[in-house]
Image (cartoon, rainbow, N blue to C red; front, side, top):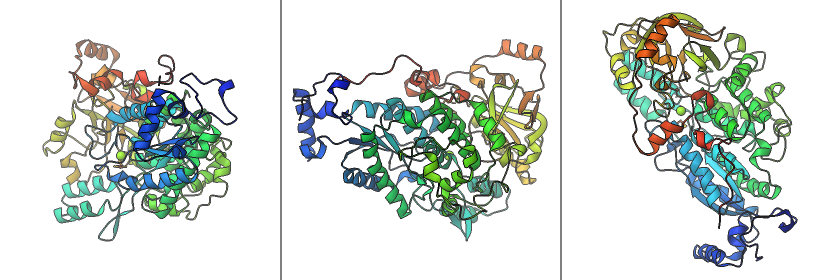
Length: 590
Ligand code: FES
Ligand code: MG
């Protein structure tokens, strides 16, 4: 071994190939490195296992309470096999598992915690490159945010969607069919036994939600940016192609370290715009907006709400995958050619010269990808939905949301694209939930259901409460969609006329805080507007009388989040994690 000392690297010091970061731990002939080597030997490794080899961290978000990642114990072994085959040294480093279903009040509160953990694991340990293993909703942006700030070669291994659900021979989709059959149960159209059958059949294998929810949206976005192997994000979790993809990702990251292929070479503005175009064509989850803005900002790329609105006007939705599509699920999407085929089809909207983890361009990666089923991945001239109809995601502004809010016009009753109705306002989730079940509630199908104090700081963490349930009284009358408005988010598997992410949020005194039950709200998707018909003088009077709600957390992580999370239109990152906050963090002293 060569004594590199604990001195900072200099170009003169470096051999022909890039000096490995991990050599600072393992290389020097000093007391500290003696400790690192003897402790590696304690684990059964020899000098030849690490000397001169890229050390690859596998950030594994496996957990006993995350069904979407339950195959990750095995997959990390598959990744290790690839790393070893390519001459690397794998180190599995577990990171917090954000399990969408079980974590309360919301995984969104903890996305930035995972981002911090990922960044600091990579910084504090002897790591030259990283395999990021995630998939369940916020794990994708969480891991990528951290790796981006750390700026070491990284490749993303998506968990892959679970198999289609099945009940009495009917296909069931994650999330979407829970909401649907819940309403049927409330309306008395199905029996409790039927409902129990849905419960047993809706989640049948390892893997993420198999509708086009936030998981499938974000893994597709990671791939479109160029952070995963081509086609990786569409492979079902339990397909043996998924094992091979995991192994290949392990092999590839070792080469990426040797090539010094860092995230900044991949995460350019064009790469993010490609991801937005892909998201639109997929009919993506509304959550994409928040995460992509946060990820872009970490990469020092200027992306905002208007980039999404612009893309939604021109890129048609061609993936016929529920909930935006009508029929299919991710398993069908994979058999139809998957994301690479979809990208090939919309290549006219993409910058094909963007570099990816393969070391090749997007164009080279997708060149040969074919669509095998034109009903699942539609031709451009037979889309599911176009910009003329409002697009996949629409950004609305007005006196209710000066900094914007978002909606999915593609998955609601089109009559709500232009609508006026009186507000029915709830200040918190429990009182809303109680009122909605009251069959004497004073509500009509024209009402606009409003929930506030559910934003980034007010939630805190912006829970997925934005798909407010239809009042029981109306469900029984056959009503299945209503206009709903909140500063919350909604699940990517949700649907309906839900206007979300109102910014600034009510908790910080955004105009939503001033709304009262009975005020008229008007929406016009074509004009991209949303407003409350209340005179300015009256709003001023209400503002003077407004009292800020009590904070939910007085200490701990919740307190920190409620003080540092940015607004929805800024990506909900913590202010102090953003790339432009303070000077860059230097390498640790060893
Ligand atoms: Fe994990 Fe939906 S609950 S992806
Ligand atoms: Mg979700």
